Image (cartoon, rainbow, N blue to C red):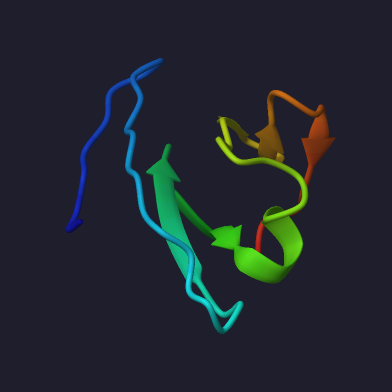
Length: 76
């Protein structure tokens, strides 16, 4: 997928097929105001039961699944 540069309130969409081994993982890093955070945006063991189409709202305090109102802390 490569590096994507998004402006405020923009979005990025991608599609994939999860692994039959239940080990699919995608992560993203986010940077603004000189601060960088990263998060495992899709972890098959965590997310497969939560959503078939995961929509995230990225906030300064961490990413939230918008269709389930579930928020997570940043990995770092």
